[in-house]
Image: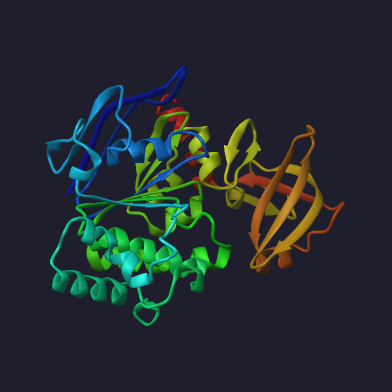
Length: 326
């Protein structure tokens, strides 16, 4: 099912949570709503779900206007970050809950629950209670419960936000694989840019209740619409009054065309990369991101001299916002 959000505005008193937001989501795609906390991502998800009504604008799902349709009639599966399972029910009973509410036949419920538990790899935990599960298993159970009712659209509101970093990474891979298997139109709210870039087909960057840019992960990273998108989607440093990706700063031991002299202040090795913090002659500080092998060849040390310039692709990237008139 495709989703069409048209000029949606939502206010809470004097606060405008969504300001004329428009978004198109293709059927079967996974779209990430990415932005800082409190900038409207969850509000947009709730409006699409029918949990909140917009003050202005409209919502269409599968070509049908559902702006005033109750949430229970929209065919949507919803999974919150703070998923609260029924602790007195087993995993299987939690997954079956939505089907029982809809008065499905017992045989159908048993079959669907078995199917969902196998899908999310929780078959062996079917008779356990939520307190006996890990955080990642609880979130997989939450997704199984949302999927059991066979929703046309799946909405995920930071479902992995309360989990530790490694579990989040594992679940991201699992979620992307699950989506490729089911092809359910999915919207994922996240403030984690790595999460959005890894799992989404399309990224919608939201800031201050407005959508700043929509595109593929590579498009929004390589061709940011403005400075906010550029700095939010990845590391950036100021060079010649422009924002530049640190990996587009070229560091040399000798001067070259267009290069500027800098004093190395600090060299920090972080895993496979090296971050070189430098002071330019005019007093501005910048930093560059280099592979460890390249940094080793340069033999950079604190207090030493270096010459820096912008890689051409970086110059074009930094100027993309100006070229777009932003």
